[in-house]
Image (tube, rainbow, N blue to C red; front, side, top):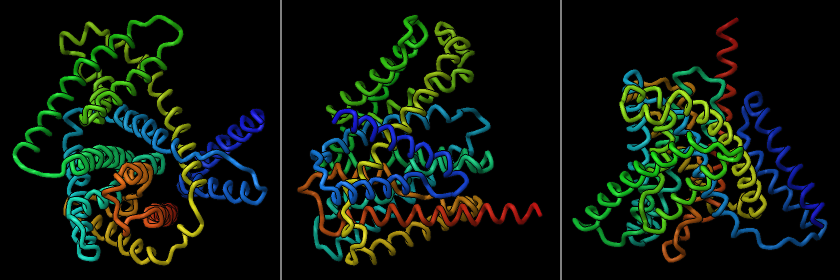
Length: 393
């Protein structure tokens, strides 16, 4: 039995790797293929009457670890310097404004049709409004550098802002001066924790001589994230702060106390950490989407009750995106199409307290929105590729 499990896992991850290799050519997001692979696996186990234990408890764990690695991967890729200030500002506002506007708009619509509390509707709306860096970043490898950098910044910031916004609304039932004061204090506290933890981790990264050094560093990052989450601190800020700090040592090397970390030597270790993070994020993300696909019921994919809602929400996503790109004077093609929902949407949806769940936002709606936004991105990227080929000829 154990041999069969090992063979199955190896084959599935190798198939996931093949999907990742071919996604730049086919323009089909590998995550959609992984969901389909998981669903096919479900059908096969049912057909051959293979009984597996309940795997649903593993989904939030994989999702959380995947989120940490994906945000760390994205933050290590981001460059902070004066030449990037305009790009970072645009990315921040294009991540923030549509997320907030759409979340409030959806919450109002949910309230109109469902007649429940506005805060609860907002908690259910936020997951649908977050761009997935897990799908967006791997899909833009073939784009020009400015467009690729914009997508990396925007999707990474959308993940972080979305999680912070979701946690703030989910954990607070009443809003007033005390609530916002407490949240501000939590942000200040996590910045302080991030500062000292980042310095400590950078010191360890530079000084550990043992042949095993990167796994303990990543485990410490996950541990700090988990402990911070217990105390309801915005722990993703720590991941972002750590990644930005060690990924931009060249910009900080003129600071006197940074020299003590030996930035030239540390940069070599950071490159190795980045490679390990990329591969770890791929592995966890692949298993997460295969498992989620396995847990999907066919009736949820084809649910006609939510299909109209899914189409309207997807249309709203891209209408709002068109407006924001025009306002910020950014190119519509191909950026218009790159607004997929994915891992963050699923993870936040799974994090909704059962007492806060509303009938309108269910598995079917989430699956359909994830699928539709990925299909729009796929069609847009294929069209963009054809246009680029035509212009060369």
